[in-house]
Every structure is written in C-alpha cells, then in structure tokens.
Amino acid sequence: LQAGEEKFDSQYHTLDKAREDAETIHAKGQGKFFGTDEKGIFKVIVRSPPEHLENINSAYAEKYGYTLWKALEKELNGIGEKNLRQATLFEIGMKLNPHQTMSRLIDTACRGFGTDELLLTCCLIRFQPHIANVMACHIEEFGRSIHDRIREEVSGKYKVLLLQIVNTVWPETGVTD
Image 1 (cartoon, rainbow, N blue to C red):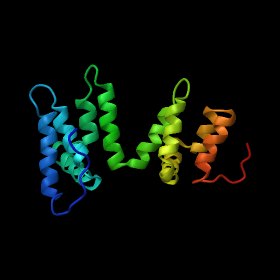
Image 2: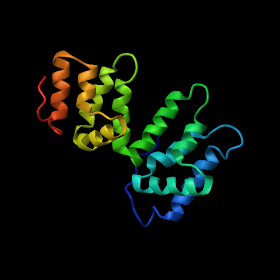
Image 3: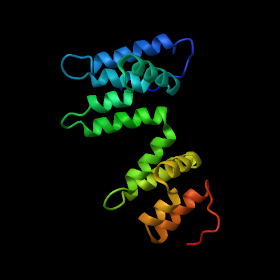
C-alpha cells in the first residue's frame, strides 16, 4: 500500500466522491470481466476515512443492491483468498463498526477447539481503551460478558491477569475468583 488513511475533509469527501469511489470498487471487482483488481479496491478502502467509507458503503448498496461487506465477501471467495477476504472484511469492519468488529475478534479467539491465547491477549490489551463499548457489543451479540469468556477459556494466573486487564475499564461487582 502506498499511503495511509486520509483525514476526513468534507470539501473533498463529498457524496459525489463516495458514489465515484463506489463505482471504482465495483469496476475493480464484480464489474470487472475477468479477475479482481485487489490493489485498486484496497487503495480506496484503506485511504478512506470512516465517515467517507460509510458514504461509499451507502452509495454502493443503493446502486448495486448490497453492502461493500457482502460484495467483497463474495468477490474475495476464491481459492487461496481466505486470508485476503478476512483482512479486507476486518478493515471494513474496523472503519464502519469498530466495536462490533473487536467483539467478534475476541469471539474468534475463544471459539472452537482450544483458545487462541495470543489473539485473546492481544485483543484485550489493544482494545482496552474501547473495552466498555466492546463489552456492550459482546453481551448483546453473544449473550455473555468478556469476563465470562475469560473464565470459560483460560485458568490460573493467566486468567487473573486477563480479568485484571478487563476490570480496569469494566469492573465486575460481587464476583470473586
């Protein structure tokens, strides 16, 4: 990638620009006769500030009938594109619904056989400033708190450490371990 996210500028990031960017993404993906120009798509997504990407998403859905998420989930579904698809959808999620995306990543760390302890630890440390909002999303979507997930997934001093990380932002009351 050549550049990072641009700062939102209402004079530049207009609704017309959003429609133009939505058409660019479509032309480089589903509108392309053969193959996908991933680099061209990523350039638009990565450079777009969240406010602008939200407008691109709306323009895309209005014109093509589904969101960027759904379009790129379909478009990046080829052999060997699993990591590419996950990274792209994560980038879109972090810009459009960051707290829900963080909550789902914590769920991913805990789901299935065995816990991805490195991913869980990285999420809790990296997302600590956002943990109150992430916790609310996690409870709403998964029906249990991040505290509960930690208790279910890990044990010993590691469990105590992770609970302390979460409790600094979202303290539990009346719970003893």
